[in-house]
Length: 137
Image (cartoon, rainbow, N blue to C red; front, top):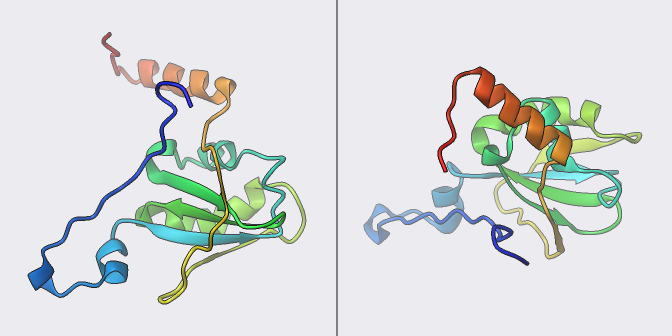
């Protein structure tokens, strides 16, 4: 991996006196969504999310368990939108999404890069400039 291609992580620090276990401490910071009947190797989940208004700032890792099941880590504020709209954005039949419940964990798998296509990256930059955002550097 070259510069700028590192994996993103979110660390949750909690005081031990609060009595929070790892699951409840992290629940406000990320949600895990199971995606079934997905051909994860042939599509970009990041592009599909961006097309429905969920941008990389709200996305975590995509863990591919097998050829048809993957797990997407997202900000809890966009989890419901992803579950409702993402099946319509992803190609294929019978694509289903469900948020993992308490006690369920994301299994081991391979990580898929969550990169936007160059075309979408340029479009997002153009929209930022149109809204008046200025980039320094």
